[in-house]
Amino acid sequence: MLRVAVVGSGPSGCYTAQGLVQQDPSVRVDVLDRLPCPYGLVRYGVAPDHEKIKSLQNNLRAVLEHERVRFLGGVQIGGPGGLPAARLLELYHAVVYCVGAAADRRLGIPGEELPGSWSATEFVSWYSAHPDAVDDGFVRDVRSAVVIGVGNVAVDVTRMLARGAAELNPTDMPEPVLTALAGSRVGEIHMVGRRGPSQARFTTKELRELGALPDTDVVVDPRELALDPAHADLSALSAAQRRNVEVLRGWAAGPPTGAARRIRLRFFLRPVELLAVRGRVGAVRFERTVPDGDGGVRGTGRYEDVEAQLVLRSVGYRGVPLDGLPFDAATGTVPHREGRVLREGAVAPGEYVAGWIKRGPTGVIGTNRPCAKETVTSLLADAPALARRRVSGDAVAVLRAEGVEPVEWQGWLAIERAEARLGASLGRNAVKLPDWDSLRTAARTALPRTGS
Ligand code: NAP
Image (cartoon, rainbow, N blue to C red; front, side, top):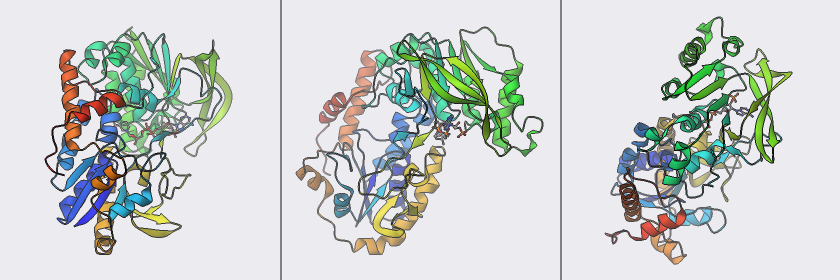
């Protein structure tokens, strides 16, 4: 039997585990996660109103319930108090790191740290009930919000700011989050790109959803569309870019209906400073940009201040170094060749990567399938050599001996039951447990182990 640890139970981790057990009957996989809950960004990143994408959890669940796969939650690899990467490699013939990109990119402009300025991921963590999330109230006393960036995360947070109680109630968000968002008075949401509409990173399906929000107008300034180099002739654009521009043109052509909320999609504005009002963010200063003829933009020295009591910086994720693993700070990824980790240019036997920590934070969930497949192919090609590595006894026994009590699958099922009970008590569907204590307590009510 080849024993493999997959670190991270998001899509890339689950697809890696799936590939391994499907392609080789002699492989057993432990999928480890820092959190007691599986599914990574599918649970803690995909917006709660995106039920169809959320239902991907059912596919990932089938992987984690495979007879040769074990889920071991609550196990931290690296970092203070965590199991060192080198120790993990003593327990398994191979380790595949699928740890994603856990940090946010920074803007690096004055005022970024003002109260009321958050990364989009902090906001997402809050409404997704991530146990590490901070509850700032976020939308309390906010009339106008600015979302910086025009990728799919920006679209997600913009949409969540505009959603009303009726649409939020069926989701799994905690009651205090639901109450805060449903009672929000945010009337203006500005989503702002530094380049042009044809260069925006959002996908058309996500963009269109903004136009379907109840009691919300989407406002686009035709003059900003006209600034785009591709404006006169869309033929040079990809089909996806063209579709985006066409949707935006539709909105630019229609007058607002006077709805309660407005989403203003802005372009060619580069954030230069967050301005304070009474110690909190009060506005964002943007510099007007123009195309530089090379796909980028240059500043014009003209500025525009946009009122905002809440600023969500949605400018992409960034991988973080994991103790004991090499890291390329420029790309925020682990250097690799076809998924094999490289140490100073040479393959490090037994260590692999897949997902965002391998290729950077791009692509949709499905992009992780081919990415994981490549890594699985490399690992299985190396299997004869890996099988000769000496490994210590069963990982769970070793972890317990070292004081780590993993949350096994039964523990996770107990969390699911507790969330269903909580939802029922509130007259709602399942509602997520939002903190470490309640997750751990629920996991401890697990049914007795059936043998692991
Ligand atoms: P992203 O797609 O990389 O978009 C980042 C945005 O931030 C871009 O508009 C970028 O503009 C802008 N930006 C970067 N640095 C900036 C700066 N200093 N000042 C102003 N703007 C700046 O990242 P993301 O939205 O975080 O999404 C990450 C990945 O997850 C993407 O692949 C996305 O498709 C995926 N995702 C998918 C879904 C879905 O399918 N529903 C939902 C969420 C996320 P430039 O282009 O000018 O750099």
